[in-house]
Structures are given as structure tokens and as C-alpha cells.
Length: 127
Image 1 (cartoon, one colour):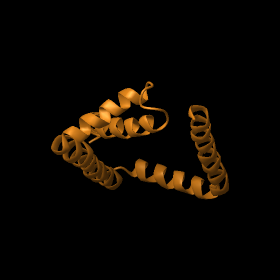
Image 2 (cartoon, rainbow, N blue to C red):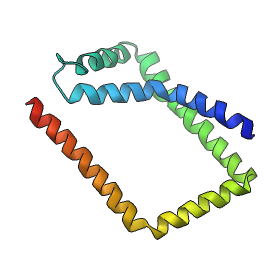
Image 3 (tube, rainbow, N blue to C red):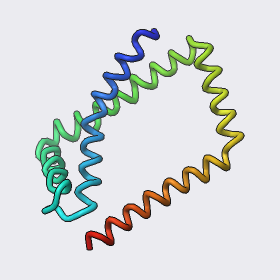
Image 4 (cartoon, rainbow, N blue to C red):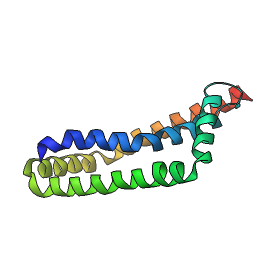
């Protein structure tokens, strides 16, 4: 089982890449005018997906991420059942997260605030 985890992880990365590319393109085309780079290239990527709804939408944005979700869920469930060390590590991690919940919330809200400030700054600079 352990020998299959790395190739499976690589396969999942390969399967999820087209959806990540599309979502990144949607983001990059929205942060500046389409005439500028990287928004222009991002718009071309979005147009390519839009021009091929069966491949772009159904295969690359639905079927492959769904396959990653199904394969990943089954693999993690199987790994949970067969690996005592994995179970202990996850439970230890959850215990740590629970004990440090306030610090994690502060870190999360700080990260979200930074992301919001970056988006606002980019918006102000491009207007």
C-alpha cells in the first residue's frame, strides 16, 4: 500500500492541474485589465475552456476533480484502517490543533486579512 501512495499522489496532482489552471486564470484575469499580462493570457485560457464545454467543463473541471476526490477519499480511508501510526499521528495533530485553536484562528484571520489587503491594493493600483 505504501508504495502506491507516491504514484497516486502524482496522478492526483496531474488530474487536478487543469482545474487549478482554470481557477488561477479566472483570478488573474480579474485583477487587472485584459490588455495587460498576465490577465491577457489568463483570458485566453478561460476562452479555451469556454470554447470546449464538453472537454473544458465536464472533463477538466468536473470529472477529473471528482476522480481526485473519490480516489483520495478511498485511499485515505484505506490508509486510516491499515496504518496505526497514521491514525495516531492524525489524532495527535487534531489534539494539538484543538489545544492551539485560538492561535490557529488568529493565524487564519491574519492570512485572510493579508489576502484582502493585497486584493484591495491591486484594485486601487489598477484603477
